[in-house]
Image (cartoon, rainbow, N blue to C red; front, side, top):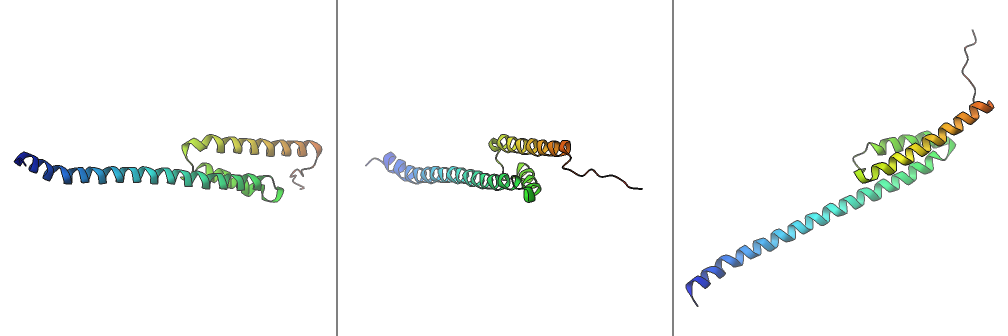
Length: 116
């Protein structure tokens, strides 16, 4: 076997091994990032469903709004999910405003008055 071939094999074998390990590490990191995004999105949607259910109940509506507001500012929220949270917040807020306006118009809400 020629000397140049022996040297090429001696140098190429560890170099190719290193490149293989490097590519494997990069693929593993990419998979871990994708899994993290998926987990965050799953948790965000779970909290969104829970908060939306809370807002529909009269006794816990304020808690649901607080959760939605906190979720909209959370690190857990992915940028792609922000429009969805904003839309849910807008819908819930509009619904609450409509109920308040209707009750106020029909006299269902007690107005605060000072009796001096």
